[in-house]
Image (tube, rainbow, N blue to C red; front, top):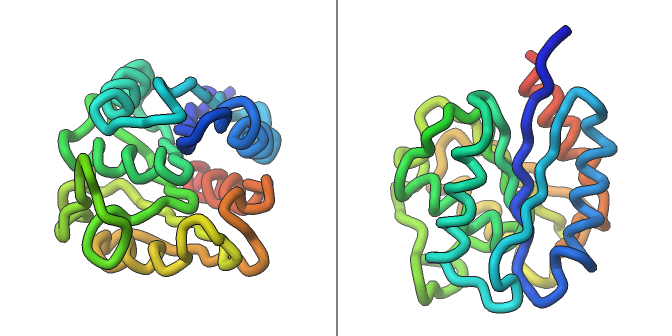
Length: 187
């Protein structure tokens, strides 16, 4: 019997996001992946007022507790902080995939950054050989869908999935994300 694959899901920011918004994304991802995956959903510190320093430290601790071959997933601000954390210092674990969902691009052409900006060579700073999947709803009114293209422009190994009719929360349905994770991790 194959070992259970691990998924780390990093929530987005905002007061109540963990319990009132992204919990639905977590539930959808867990359902979509099934029993062959262990999906972890840690509460990020000060979700209503996130800082890069506290969230990146929490993300590093969570990744260190994973086995090699895990998939890391970040939603919204959680995705932007996750990818910057991975680019800033390689993780202690070998990752199978990085998934960004409706993540704002912090830097040139995207959102201004108070604490960090994503580097123009982001892709080469990420762990070598790890595929990056970027999902963005085309009806997202929180983070413009063009941010997915900004990620694609600086991460050569990124594959972008533009989802028609989907909002910032992908309509609380991560079925498409689960399908891509299953296909890429089982092949």
